[in-house]
Image 1: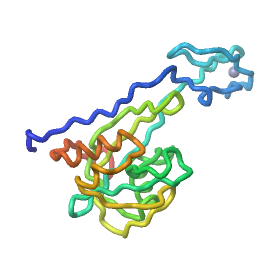
Image 2: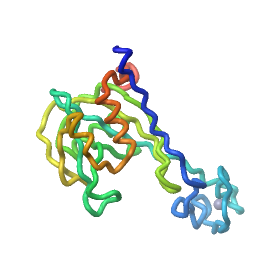
Image 3: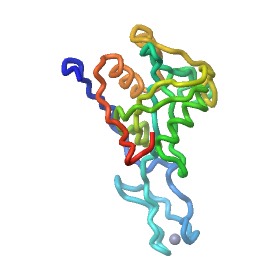
Length: 203
Ligand SMILES: [Zn+2]
């Protein structure tokens, strides 16, 4: 690996307040149905049922983001549907990991749904904690892979796709600062990558 152009990607966003935003709070205990008391929670404090002592834990939601590379080294980005959060701006393909999936399954599915492409996944670029706001904390595995089949066709929440090189990247209005930093890192060259060990996880 070329030591001169090693890049370190940190997309840890400082969060803006207590993590227990209003829409992460429950009205009733999921164990016994008792009504939860409405009160302000301190940081790291959790809703606890006064009847059965069940605790409503809060955890980040795991997801994947995918750097899909063309044979020429370009990266595929998509424009978000106008009515989506951060609509009409551009992002990398990705999404939340469903309960039944491995993160590799998720990457393949999200890329297929959002871009119509089949990809070979080459490795893990980074794992990042994104505190987007009080109600959205995601743990995102950033993967790099290459298109192996299909032709780009926007789907799901994306309305357009385009391949970008480093020059086009500079002028893109990204929905997420994290995506900009990931693509910055990719085009800087020498991206450090953790291979996915086939003994542990099938690619
Ligand atoms: Zn309870």
